[in-house]
Image (cartoon, rainbow, N blue to C red):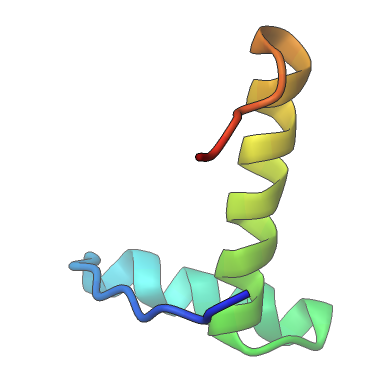
Length: 54
């Protein structure tokens, strides 16, 4: 699996809160974002079925 980079724009307050949550969980902000994305995809697939990638 190739690792890709993604750049996002984020409000400063939201970024600070993300770092707060990540620190609380003992993770980096990047790891916290990956967990949030994974959880979102899992929730979507539970409701709508597995996403098939060609």
